[in-house]
Length: 292
Image 1 (tube, helix red, strand yellow):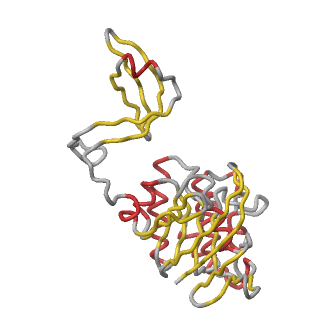
Image 2 (image 1 turned 180 degrees about the vertical axis):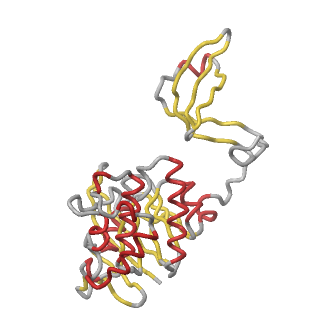
Image 3 (image 1 turned 90 degrees about the horizontal axis):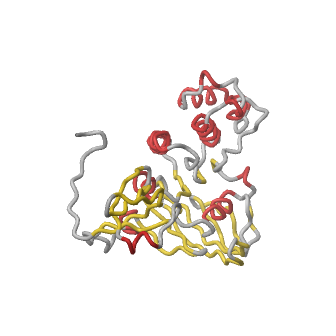
């Protein structure tokens, strides 16, 4: 069990923000911190890792106190059983793939490094420098380095956000498999709702420095939402007139679609605008992607 109650004064893009969060995460679970930019998600990870010092509160992991403001306890990062994958991977540019992974272990643990390299399919890349790797390869190296410390707590700061959709979905599967294989307790920062539902046992939804809701993804995002109404967010790509109607081309997720719009609707629209697409009383037909 991991429990924490943390307070910290932050300077956000919109002004001062008092971060005040309290939660418990069950051992062996995959939990996600979800919320808009500036809500304090990454700061929570950094405080758990010991990279940022809270102003108040405490952190207890499996009965061991990592931080307690009242008692003056603040374990440094190297004394916390954590693995951390940063959003930009933070690999050492002058070290090879193997050296990056081995940096986190003792000299006599070369066999463990070999196992991680094989597990992450990095054997042919182990002598290469990070600058020569693709985004997906860098992500695998960063994850292997985080696992090398055999952590009690794996912290992931939007580890897949820079990857394209297909690669991101593939690595989501691999990350979930590693979580299960090593019996990890994992806390991930994400703003991708599909990723949250696919991977998470529990969600902590942050808003303006506070936990606004917690529970399973279904409890946090779906309760009371069944309405038969379609409501999607889209970006306007193009507006054109064809005969007597206006056609608006929209980007919804990774899909481009055309919709018919009225004179009044297009009057206020410009290319690049963000819009909502709504429809009532829908009864869609669902089929696996790629099927006919």
